[in-house]
Length: 317
Length: 251
Image 1 (tube, rainbow over the protein chains, first blue to last red):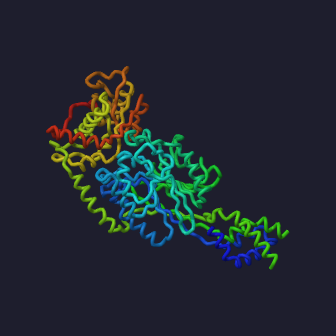
Image 2: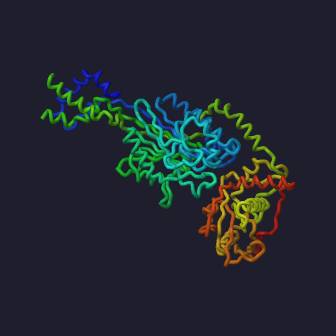
Image 3: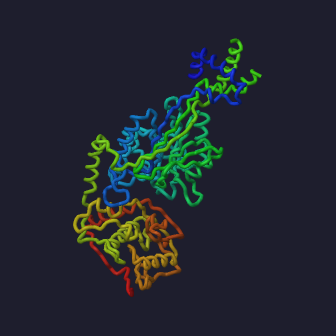
């Protein structure tokens, strides 16, 4: 509706342009691009995975990652990026919990509070987020001022029933971004007493359904999957690579679980032959990933030109 | 002008039919990765915010849960007091989950990250000893499977184990006994280990292809903490023990 309103008020300008197009159509085979009155919208996606309760930087003990990471530094970095960028989404791909005594002492309270302070927009579940059981997670959940997204865990017979979301839609300067979450099979990875009656559903099927829903029904300009499936495996176990090539409509997979340090996002062609990006930034908050998407705002006029091209030609002919 | 207007009308009509289509398309993207090192200035408000948590966490970590009568040493010897403490503790704690466990092989020597000094044992000491979040795994192995463990123990100059004894000559295992009886290749044994070793960690595959596997969800560190706390409750300190479970000769 918004767009139609815009069209109506700008009709005089619109008619003028339309006339100009009509005049040019006979000259060039594809004149539309030249007239696309476009405006670029920049979306900045910041992401982490497998931070594993790493609040302080790694201690200076001679270990490989000594002095790396730390929430206070990450927070400062995010603040400086937010000062420069209007449209920021801050996302996490799970395994927030377990790895330092902060988790053993506070059960995840501090991790979730600090993430909320940094303005995380969404996360998904990692296997270690169940380390204090479903109940242990629920107990801390009020500290998270952001949603936990999961499409392939059925929590209906657990204490998490109704407390998670399948997806979240974000609007940034007119763009619509759909985010959903997929988790790894918990059996064999997490003790049954901790995940309880959580049912694991096929991530390929659920991912496809959710991505199609977000892209086609919710008209998202970008569909992001927060995945804790793992980057890749030697065997056929479902991974981000398998997910990317077995689905449609996912533009970006922000992965976790395998603690993979990718130098840059990997591009995989999906079932439609379109690019799906996969990224993962190691673990423990050692790195912060940043992906900037530049959208062309296709104004009403641009859109119209593209849409009516054949019709106009017919008229002219 | 009339001609233009009519074109415009057609255009407008098509806007109606296409108006709910997407209005943004990704033109390009760029990637950047920030390394969070000491070159990134810290947000002092965050440090202030979690300072009370840090204090409390450190207080919890400094809680004394037991005592060591003398130092449990980390060394490359075939059998160490530190390794024996670790393996004995896991045998006791894992038997609370599965009483039929015959042997524990919960870590390699390299997996024990610190020694335990004489005197007070704190929660932090156990974290330093076992910083990894490995869990206890229970495996059922054939007698031949246990022989593979013995072979690995011999070839790698001994590892922390409990419930099994052997002699090593020229990196070969002899006189292997379990619970005082010679290893019986025709029976099955129950082993407590870690997910790390069960998954062929540390470049060993002595536990590959078990007859059965059960994940307990119990962290090895938690089991060590429980063990020390229970010893303390029973009025016992942790005492270094070398009992000849792995004896290497003929080198």
